[in-house]
Length: 328
Image: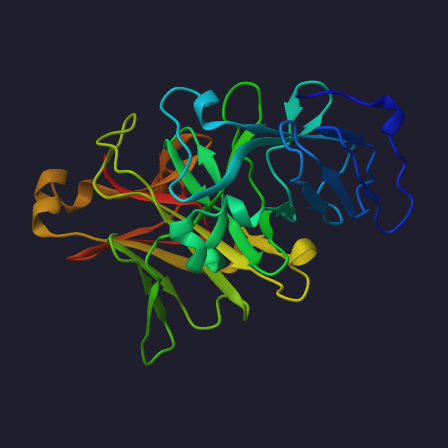
């Protein structure tokens, strides 16, 4: 439900303001340099509450925050809750004016969700620390993990968000809490200090050169379904979504961050075998694509240099996102 409450439009002049409502939305006139906290109780919930921390300069104009819970049976055809979900999924958006949702937050905002113990599946009770906030991406028809941390004693999950992905033309993003059952990332460090990160079930080869990221950075990786083709590219591996995260364990509800760009390049790579090379039509036809604005774009078309070795293809990039290995 999206509704304006004119009587609740506030001119914020303090360092931070907390507004608690029993309504699904609130409109705030927030200045570009003022951090703001907004508490929303989504429609359909008698107990749960969502709060959004908007850091300094993340939103430069007045906005409307909305959230509504949605039952699984009410989701669009073909979409279901992620496995081991906790509670109900919800739609979320920050709006400017009547019909424009904000699509980027710099720095990232933090979504804080209070969940209930009885919403955790019995099979996941011993893995509550793996709880993540997921956002549905209609382009890839998959749930992507956000940079999340969880206070299992206070039952609060805090997730950083930089790029909301609208579910449909209405502009809301679809989000859900769920247990992350992905195997742990594997790391190997060579003599030069280069860290190679891999993940069971993926041919990803993600490399961090020495001193390229700040201390405390960790990465959240989601393996996506493997569509046979997408537009003008044919994908030859399961695409992966990579997010760089910085978690403040002392104050996660305000200071968790998604790290979108880096001053030094990171290396994204995919391993391949002779059969993949043959099906692609040769090494020169293999490339790495990046999902931008719901379209797969060849990294070389973006000006990046792609290196094609005998068994791995790599690209250096200062921006993380969703990548795949494809044939042109």
